[in-house]
Image (cartoon, rainbow, N blue to C red; front, side, top):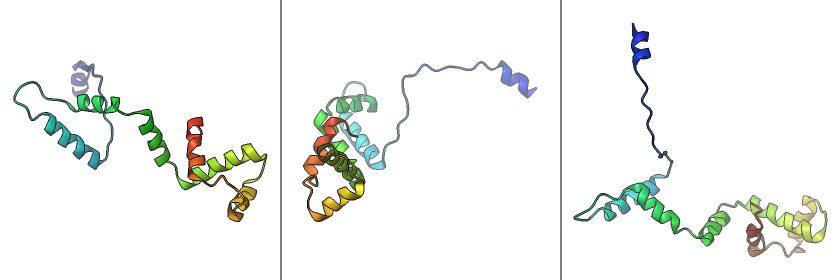
Length: 124
């Protein structure tokens, strides 16, 4: 009898264009505060989170994205990028030889700007 009831219920399909995303608690609180501020008005419909996020995301510049990319690099990533750059200019060396150059101060690749400038070359 239970199987007959389950078979008879038509499944309803929802046509939605939304999906869930995970954000930190801090991000959620900031979004909530901004929505409350945007919705402190006498007239009109409520501003939805989607609308606020869409406006904010359109304001993200290429410089913002580059900064986020740089901040996501670990020291190991920076070392690997410096090693690849060093190999391009000094021929094929082992990583051990490269580390020796760094420790002996013979390499001028150790600057942060040289490594992060390679982000433009899509080394990520």
